[in-house]
Image 1 (cartoon, rainbow over the protein chains, first blue to last red):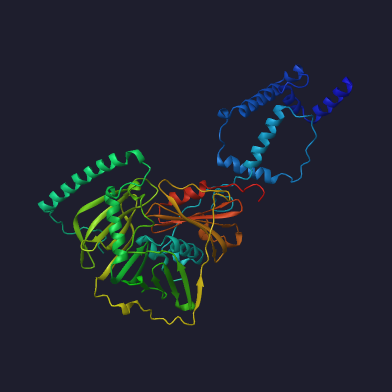
Image 2: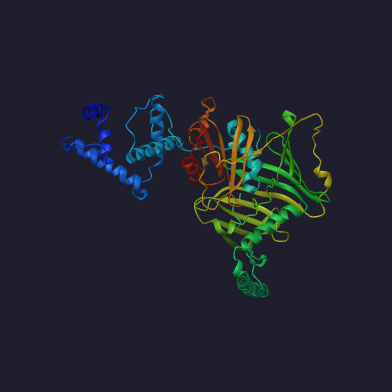
Length: 166
Length: 350
């Protein structure tokens, strides 16, 4: 029985040593302090505690920038679509917490924001404003201007701009 | 060409000054009384007596544009472009009738009867029908304009100006923040009809302007001038079908600049297909936000960022699988901010 349990833990350990650190923090399983006494082990231990603290207290959380969400969205899009989750042992509260984080990430993955504007291939400079004599001369713009005028055609300085030749 | 309104200054008569003073005291007393009366139910509609003087003036201008008979020619200048139009406006037993005829460029006519406007496109033998209140110059306010005093400083200039042979008084509406332009107006002293309007940039320079070149006000306007010179019997009639929508409910978080409120949200057919349009206004300036499916084919070079023409600024960006185009006669940063801070969160299960 005990041997069986150890064997199972070993498999899990091989697959994801970090996951077992998570279960230790949940108060499950036997903590193996010698494994944690490495720079990486301490870092994982601290990180999981921090995650737990943030999940328990929203005040500790920071709101990531829009660009962070965009990057997450892109990264998730780049992932293979079918991911078979590994069966794990019954979940403790920490696991539930983590799956909550996963849900948050899933929600974040569909917050779409503006793509940063780039003026040409390879260029990272934002494109500059084009000044044109008459916005109504471009057929692509005309359509928008007409639609705008139709609803907002009140302002004197707004109205006639749409009335140039089509 | 003289751009400003610098005109002969007038001396204010002592009696006028006295009246002014009297009116002011009266208004303060009314205000105090109104406050005392309204206190228990502050959320109730404010009493009519406490109308903001700026708003009252602008409403007079709006009323004049809607209720007077007039005909004339006005010129509109935006950036390097200048176009003139002839306008005839008459009020009869059925309401307002208006005909605007473009005098420059391709022939174009707008025939309006109250809320219905027919746009005549002679070269296509087409009539576009629009059914909504589409006031144009010399009307001014969009909606009720209640937010105008919150967003603009009102400045009645001393002295008169002269436009199209008529005396007019100069009013300035200066923006309280960077989300809108300022306006300098000149309204007819006798009838309050708007004779000239200029859009002012952040430094006070004129960005674009519209002004009557000649005008007739009152009974002398012949109703025969309302008849179009085109026979539209065999022309195709097209009416845009607009369906109300709720962009927030469908996952769009569009941040409005301070002082702006939504006027309408519709789904409408455009040349590029079905497009969602949101219009917001602060009472004077208006911004349209268009949302449509992303399509590289139609990636016009013009849309590679920002486009500016006179006071009109356009900014387009891609959000997920959508194009978002924000435009309006507002500063470029305002349309850009809207476009760059909009978020789209598709609802689960869609």
